[in-house]
Image (tube, rainbow, N blue to C red):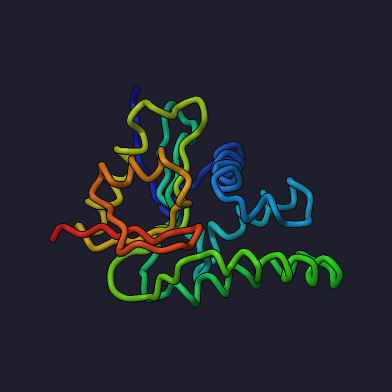
Length: 195
């Protein structure tokens, strides 16, 4: 398979590629499935974030095979974690009506209690990683992560992972990510560094 990697903002993706990238992000992150908006509206919101600086999905790295987006990783400087999450949340809130916003905020507050804090710091924070269902197990995820590490001069990285997602944990561990310490949080922080 001929695989290429492109930063979203460095080449003009076509409408099908933008839709595919948005769908990958949607499928990889339960947050979007909990939104009280139509699937199509959610995909539109994600695609807008690809070009909105200071959001969590801005300028992702895409893995492309035969003109099809088969993988995506969204990342940014870890020091911007809180600001980017806030900006993305504001993007979501603008799409919701008053009643929807109240219900969603209640659900979000409850979910946030299960997320291990990952304060800013140096290096890169990886906010989204997804490989298309048809291409899982083909090595695309490994190549995508390798490209991310090489592109960012092998900086430290961190991400959140569900404590029950054994496949993702194993993938990240094989790549060199480690948990900081034992914790009871549902979403745990894993760190990567060369040292």
